[in-house]
Amino acid sequence: MSTGIRLESGDLWWKNAVLYELDVETYMDSNADGVGDFRGLIERLDHLQSLGVTCLWMMPFFPTPGEDDGYDVADYYAVDPRYGTLGDFVAFIHAADERGIRVIIDLVVNHTSEEHPWFVDSRSAKDSKYRDWYVWSDEPVEEAEAIIFPGLQDRNWTQDSTTGQYYFHRFHNFQPDLNLANPAVREEIMQIMRFWLQLGVAGFRFDAAPFMIETVGVSGKPNEPHHEWLEEFCLFVKRRRGDAVLLGEANLPPHEIARFFGKGHELHLLFNFMQNGALMASVATGSAKPLHDYFAELPAVPELCGWVNFARLHDELNLDTLDEKMKQKVFEAFAPEEDMRIYGRGIRRRLAPIFEGDRKRLELLYSLTFSTPGMPMLYYGDEIGMGDNMTLDDRLPARTPMQWTDSETGGFSNGESFKLVRPVAGEPFGPKQVNVRLQQHDPDSLLHWMRRLVQVRRQSTAVGYGPVEVLETGYDDVLAHRFVWETNLVLVVHNLSDKSRNLNLCKLAGTDAEYLQVQLADPSSGPGDEIADKNVRIPGYGYRWISGFTRKTDAPLP
Ligand code: MG
Image (tube, rainbow, N blue to C red):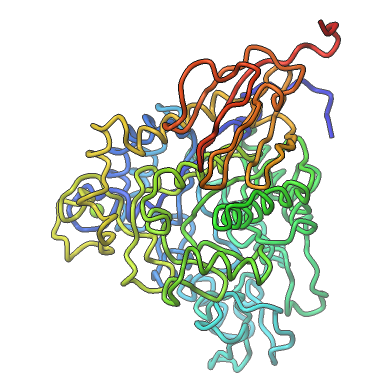
């Protein structure tokens, strides 16, 4: 749907941004206490600037009992003292801003920690001031249809001894759900957003967005999604900062998820779990079919909105969007041992260990991630092919300290390694073999390649703005697609098989294409004249990004 207004790139910066997810706790420790902090992060902003990322998503850094790695917040208006002060946070925002990097923060308001003063008050008596800020019932009236952490959690209602009533919790019982049906709660959420906007953040990532707007167990209210609350939040944020964005976590089927964009005035961005599932299925099976099916099912997106595409994020690598048969195929390929899997739906490992460090397939995976419609995201450490630590529980193996040097602590801290907030990744993808310093001095490193990929994606405005067209290649294992925005054209080709394939790239680019140039290619491809109108060999797992122009539609064809 077009508004008829010509869009300038600055208006919708997220269309052409590159996002980077990190946790301040595991990024860089400046005071040798073994815990990452904002002062440390400031020291590492030059790394992020040279990587070329334009926006950071910060995992929660608020005071917390830490029972769910910070997703159990005890105070929304403060920085956990282990990470620094509010002053340090503002210094960080200022330093990021100086480097042209925006910052989005996690807003976890589906639930609070049970230690949050609101809940402490709420559970104290039936007539307490904050009683209605949570969902209470004499009986567990209605079970939610799905348990979030099978194996770790077996119910959604827990009886509280003080009043004998039950409280609702979508997640663990130490994470009571806030009652957003209460307008006072929604007003407080807006206060929280106003506070952080005023400190300079460029938006929020809404944790568990579908659960925020449900009303399970709220007395007198049937359970149905209240999208008008998201509109309320969006309007509130946009009036205070015009370029701010709301990014939502909603792992739902295609026909349900697009509802969260609304008409462009609910969530601007949504994590693309469908793309991630299809990507893993295609790479695991060497077939372009899962990605072809994904493109065919991709719901329309309002002009102001977009997807966030990722190969990996901090949670398990979630395969819920795949059918059971395909899920098992991906498990067999990428997580052959039971311990590598979690909740029956995901993979605990990082990508470099999954692909045994195979550069060809890692490049293929990221090249695909960066060339599908939406904003690409990198998870910290993936720019160097960092490993995991499978001795850790739950989803923590992929949340180990960033690897800066080959020291025992990976250069993350000058403290003692046994005091680190989390142990470093194990070999062969631990700090000894894989670190930023080593790769900085090696022009053939993954880090240098990743910088190039980020640069090419940022230059390819058509990928951010243009509609996508999937092309017929004659091969089941080759994906070719084309974007056109105004007169800019980008053609991308990926060979998912291990065998070389011959393609006529000129033909794929279309009869309206001119001045075709290779922007990025796998290192094993030949240089030079490959854009000539003849078949070109694309090696196994090879890829090409080609940019060009299209003739104006009103110009006569020669
Ligand atoms: Mg520290």
